[in-house]
Image 1 (spheres, one colour):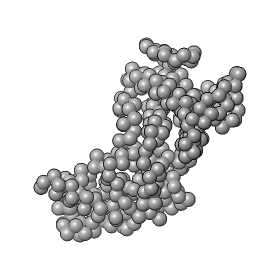
Image 2 (cartoon, helix red, strand yellow):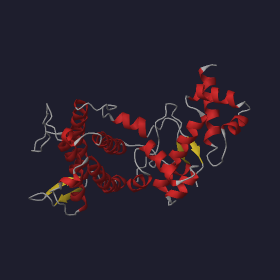
Image 3 (cartoon, helix red, strand yellow):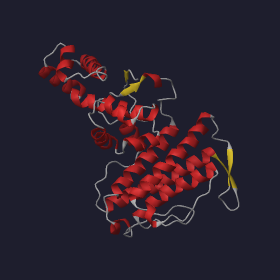
Image 4 (cartoon, helix red, strand yellow):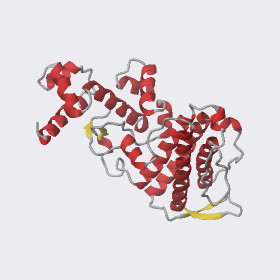
Length: 318
């Protein structure tokens, strides 16, 4: 089979699976649509699409579920049933395993990127979101998305460590920041990543903030919850700035003494720059503590794993 024929076959077979999400179709039913036996269909599909029909169908249903959670008012239970799960508990387990977060927390984050890793690049694509700007990723999406995504992964890794490991002095500390902050342990590094976002969120929204974070809020799980909360507000503010093309507009940071004036674009670039430094230091610290981590914190890893737009399969949504 030539490369062109293989691509055509892959597209045709993928479409059969993608268009079956609103049915209770079995692999045998899908094979009939391809005019093949179940065995032939499964073998050919796996060869040209690089995924089994059942695995692709489960993944697309979860991607659609993620889209529904973020962009519709459907209840979590209805989303679970629409994804062909017999119970909310089963759906929650599958969703958490795929997205590393519970359905309810995913909904609160309002994360617009809902694609799961797939080497064939075939993903759920909502027709209602086909206009430019709704699904296309700009630089804000890539930088903000990667910072949040990578930080969550670091905190999840940190959650596997003991208290002693989290507070163990690091053998090497590279301090490049023009102000004093303690980065001598992994816990301190992670705390500074989250705290930076919280401070700037308060400054941008004009709200007060208690800078003395209690120790109970510095566990990996507590920091993860703090991150999700501050990200939701920070991303809302910056998305509004992007919508208004107001990156060069200024605001007054009343938390500074004396108060200072900054541009929205300057603050966003500031957060991304210094948090990238902290994240890479935390990644190195995790590896020094023996944690088997994946990747290098590269934004292209985020783009590939969470939002690879190379190929889209339009699928009808409610």
